[in-house]
Image (cartoon, rainbow, N blue to C red; front, side, top):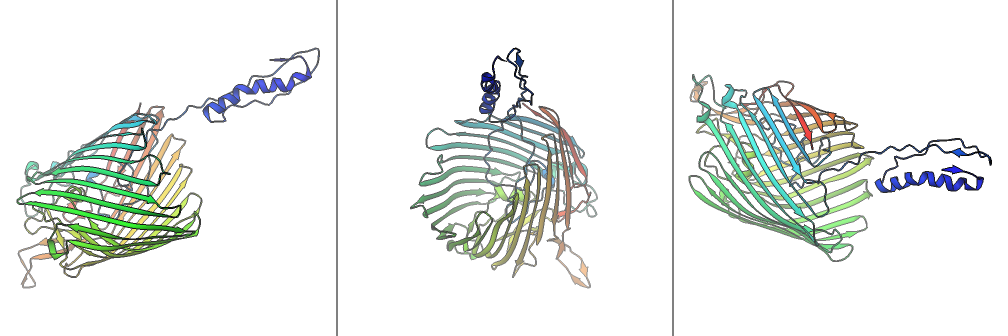
Length: 566
C-alpha cells in the first residue's frame, strides 16, 4: 500500500492492520502486532509501510473431560498399584494433573525393577458438541515382589469403554469397566516354613465387570435437575465366590422459586452373594429434603430413610436419620461455615472391599455400615487468590463398621471383624490447595480418626492418622515435576501362637503394624510435540514397611517409559 497524499494516511494504517485484527477475531488471541515505524509524508515521494509480523500460535485442543465417579487424590498411575495405600475413611478431594494431552489420544509404556511392565492407552474422540466416546486401557505387572520373588508378584489389568450423547434436553451415556487382578498370599512366616510354597498354590485372582447407563440434564437453568443411573456390577475370586449387584442411583431437585427447592436422592441395590452359602442382600435408601436460601443463610431440612437386608450383630434393618444442614456465608466467595446432623446406611460390597485389601479370606460375612446419628461442622474458605482451605469435624456412632484382622484359620489372610457394640468415631479432616495459574500446585490433606471399640481389642488396620503432601510444577508444558509424601500412623493386627508366655498359654497376640513414610517422585519431559519421556520413583526411602500385618511392600522401585500423543 502506498501513500500519495496526507489525507490517505488513516486509511492506509487501517488497511495495514485489518488482516491482524481479522486473525485476532478468528483465533481469539492477540498474537498479531504492527511493528513501530517512522513515516515521513512528502507529496512528491512514495512511502512504503513495513509489513506487520504475525505470530501464529497453534491452537491446543484438549481431550473431552472424562466423567469419573469418585475423585482420588493421586496422580493417575503415580503409585504402583501393588503398593497402594488406600484405607482412607474418606475420599481425598484435591485433584492432581498430568501434562494435558495435545490430542484426544495417547499411549504409554514403561519398564522397571522387580520385573515390572506398565502400559496405558487413552483413546477418545476430540472435543465435540454432540457426543464423546472413548477407551481406557491400563496394565501393570511385577514378576517379583518383596518376599520370595515371584511368590509376591502381582498384576492388574483394566479396560474401560464410555460414551455420551448431548442431543436434545438431556445427556445420555453408558460405561463399561472390565478388570482382572492377580495377587499372592505371601504373608507367611519363613521361619516356620522351611520350603516356600509355589506361587500357584497361594494365588488369588479377581475378575470384575461393571455396566452403567445414565441420563442427566443438559441445561443447568432447568427447574427440574436430575441424574439417574442404572448399573450392574459383577465380581468373582479364585475361591468360587461371586457377587452380583444390580443398582440404581437418583440425584434430583426441583426449584420452587429462586430461593427454595425440593431435593430427593435415592439408592437401590440388590446383591446376590455366593461362596459356601448363598446370601441375598437388598438395600434401599431415600433422602427427601427442603432447601431454602435466605441472603447469606442456606438451610436444608430432611430425613434419610434406609433399609438393609443384613441381620448381623442384631443391628436394626430399617433406619431413620435426620438430614439437616445449615450453612452461612461469612464473606462471599471467601469464607463459609456449616454444621449439620445426619446419618445413613453405607453400602459395603466385596467388589469394593477387595480393592482395599486383596488378601481377604474366603467366606466373609459382609454387612452394611449404619452411620448415625452423625454431627458435623466445619468451613470452606479461599483466603487468598489461588488458595483454598477446608476443614471438617465429624462425630459419629457406627454399627457394623468393618475392620480387617488376621484370620485365626490362616494368618496370611484377613477376616472382616465387627464390634459387638457401636463404634464411636471422631474424624478431624483438613485440606489445603494452592494452585497458581495451573503451573504450580501444592496440596496437603490430613485426617485424624479416633475409634472407640468397646469389645474389640483395637481398631484393626485402621490407622489413627494419615496424611498426603504433594506438589507439582509445570514448566511451559515442557517439563512436569511432581512429588508425593504419604504418612500413616501404626495400626494393629493379630498374631497367633501355641506356646507358653510367662508360664501361661497365649493364643492371639495383638501386634502393631509399621508407621508408614513413603516418598514418591515423578518427572515428565516432552522432547517433541507428540513424544515425551517419564520416570516414576516409588518408596524412595526404601522402607519395606507392613501396611497390613505380615505383608511388607516393595522397597525402592522405579519405572521409566515413553508417552506418545496422536
